[in-house]
Image (tube, rainbow, N blue to C red; front, side, top):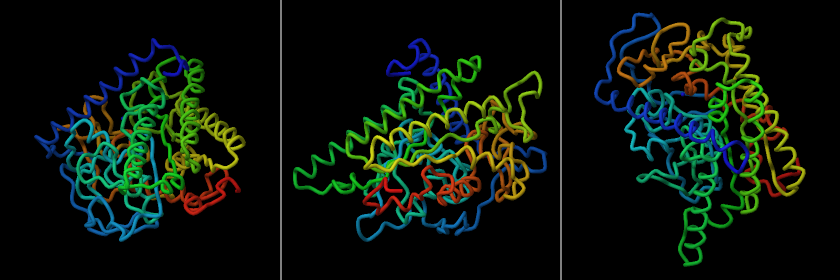
Length: 418
């Protein structure tokens, strides 16, 4: 685990308070984990008290990169031909939240590939990392990373806990957009001074602008009556649509937009006390949460269609992440996953291994074996194994509207001709 007049101002404090409480809990858990990493054996069979180390060069999906290469692949000899500007939440945060909050995350975060914590809320790589690998470009540096950042191939503005709705979090989508504007303005300033910026004018023009946000907005509304939840979704989508329009007005022409996943299949949601199981579907997921996620995706897809018809010189691609992520649960056996609804790192054991007060990285965490194939890492975020499966499907273009691959956007000169 609104702004622009879209929703009532009275809800903003509760959204902000919820975000701060989550952030404080994560920070506190990280501090405790730094003081005491070795939890007692859990006794559930699938759990152990300390993680082993995965051998270097572990293969994930279609791309093999040595773990000894640390967080970033070797820098190319020349400027990368691929530039990505990413906006989002923890699903694509490569270390932004850790940097801005001074969170010194420790193992087991990052244990499977990097073999150290990198600020990603996972045991390894994220979907955005696999996308970068497929395009033969280094992993994206967080915008707020003070040391070791390399912005020659783009910037990652994503911050864990972020919302699309302004005011819902400190680094909501509008803030990330203004961070981009600042970065772009300073780059143009360097060019005008005759200096070389990390990204030149052509880099900004040809860049791919990726957006993966909205999950936290939906989660914050789900305590409301369901008709009110549905009524708020158009406002969330409107913020994403506005951001695409604003980026377009500043020269962006290639957009890769992710829908949200199957929220009703997250252990965090399933562990919320309920009176009965009437809301569970055939695969054990919460129907209400998933219906809201599908409604969000339908409206976001429609918004992309509208913009595509209006911005005829732009490529605006929507990716159905719900179908991909729900398949991890519905067809888990085909993916070699035994417990699709259980968190690898959490507390409480089966069926969900999730406790809202004793989460992953707490002193009492219960951890699955290294190499065990789980969908969920900590109850909210996916494991590297799951991210690899998701990324492999994203990269095919089969779940995209229009049906194109992200690789096809790199050298495209007529982005919207497909």
